[in-house]
Length: 124
Image (cartoon, rainbow, N blue to C red):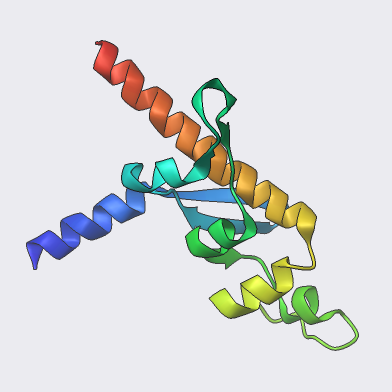
C-alpha cells in the first residue's frame, strides 16, 4: 500500500487552484509530462499551445465556494455549498466562457511553469 500513498502524493503535487471570483475557485490537476505533447499543435516554429474545453473538463477535479444559487440562479437555488460534481461542472461551465478561459489559462500556465522548472534543473 505504500506505493499508493506515493502515487497519491505525486498526483497531489500536480494540483493547482485557479481563482475565479471572490471566494470561488477551481481545482485542476496539471497534465503529466507524457500528456503535454497533446496540447501542442502545428509544425516546427508554428507550434502553439492549445487547451480546449474538453481538456479543462478532463483536468478539473474540484471547486470551492460554489452554491446551488451560483449554479441554478438565486431564484431557484439555495445558498448551500455544493460538493464538486464533474458533470455539473461541465454543464455549468459551458455557459461561462470567462471561467473556462481562466481555468484553461491556469492549466497552460502550470504546464509552462513545469517545463521551465524542469529545464532550469537540467541546466544545473
